[in-house]
Image (cartoon, rainbow, N blue to C red):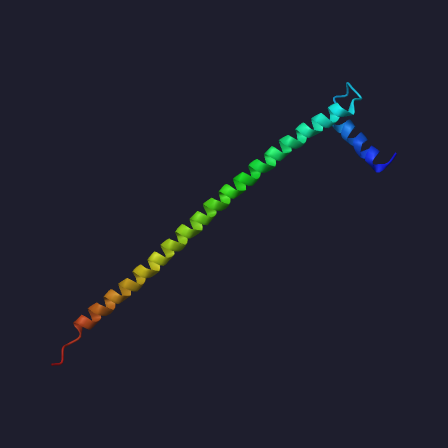
Length: 92
């Protein structure tokens, strides 16, 4: 037997219902199985993409919050500096 025949025999043995030797039925079952697997893979890809988008959004939100916090810290220090300057005695 050639490799192709062995492979077809393997598919037939694995996917046939055991009630027929008709290879076309085996191939139909194989096609259905592959279509189910394809749908599962596409669903998994969609889930991963959705998770990726959520993570990107979270990172962006966290980055914006960190930048805002840094700006607030800078503004706070500036306010303290101004208060200190205002407390300096005037030498007129």
